[in-house]
Image (cartoon, rainbow, N blue to C red; front, side, top):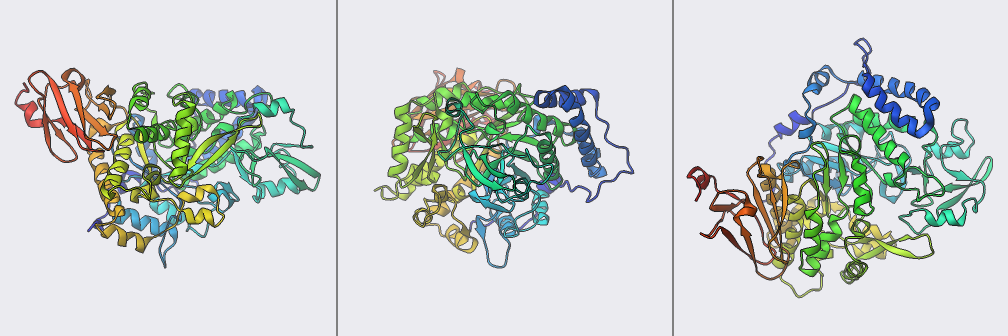
Length: 634
């Protein structure tokens, strides 16, 4: 039986119970913003709007902060001073990524079905849930938002979101780059309502952007940049980075910023512990530039961070920027002033390349250069998501031929490929649309099921071991395969990895020990539970990537004055491998090293060498044997 007992998760309940007051309490002293806090917010506003407009805008920002502060309960105010930002993320964290309606069950709202599943199966494994946009929308499976303030009634209610927030940390999406063309904001713009005339980026003609400027603009899509809309004042050509239904907001208008800040603080009141800044790369535009990663873009993220640091320091900013690795890392700022967590976009294509080739050299070289950002900021290590497997993060790390090989393998495994416009009339592969299980395993391959499951789990062990916080997309908990039927019915390419799961059917498969679903789910959950019981996997613990041969990815976490080290070894091949690790790499006098997954022991030989044999796709997490250390080692 794979279902957990229904005992209440007392630890989570105690940690995350932060219900705000339904109405602000102005009978208490108002928030006092310190001069340094005021200066930090004003500095970012000045970058965006200049000194005069920044001063006027700041007065409204401070008013909003005071109103939010008045919603805090006395318990929240009492506990806040003890918050330690260096322990915001720990080895106990795993982020589950899911749509609000990926799980369905008769008689339940989808959000209730999700809540019941987490209680029933993921107890002691997941403590954070990223619910992808759960607002009313018109397209792009939630990322074309009609109303930022309401829960889509097809999913559930704010009450159900808040109930989840009492037991789990929640990540909400800040889809602030664009809104739906069906949104009230855009309809008011088209209707000529005062105050909305420059809420969006628009031009009088299609040819308003010089072709030389157009070629510079970084695009994640191949659709037209400008889309024609007819309004009360005639036709306008509106900037649509992602699709004709997703109209870009104009943050050069401070009224847009203030509206978004109000929404951001409302999300926190409803239980958000993390705000994922969706597609923030493109949030500010200047013709004559790439319209990406601009100074103002970073100032906006830093402004959101500065406001939250004042009123809700426990809430983290997470940036989603599917771009080359070094550009991606820029969203950490100086490690203390921008995102507390950045999606590690280089990791998925590098891990996929590693398992396709059976060679860790590219992954090892890249991982060896991963640096600790600060004690309060870290990486979000994921392999797949609702979008697919992005390729931009590997640009400059994998060569063009290696990326082409990933594309060819995805197609051969029944997947699809999305492209982006290069600005010169050509296009490049941008994303592999395929489930992670199918990306690794061909359905028609003449391989034992056990080998495919082992390959899948070996790949998923790597983000669990690396510095950062791991995440997993809900369908990958069960080794979901491509939903080619959805694509054949005319759905978009990303639908291949967004199949809705019936709760009853799922648990039938989970109970059947002969299915790959059972094997993947139970073994992955066990692996996660071993991780959260290992302090060396704390995001701030030391990391050293080791050379244990081309077929074994080896990383030592912890040690050097921190928690006891763990040596994580992953055989990335379908053949047995021998890893050779010298004592100097282990940084421990222990002779006996015990695997935290199986309990089996390995011993350092008299020459100071640890020889480890690994079966195909085997994963070992070796730690010094406590009894051995008490006895004094060698």
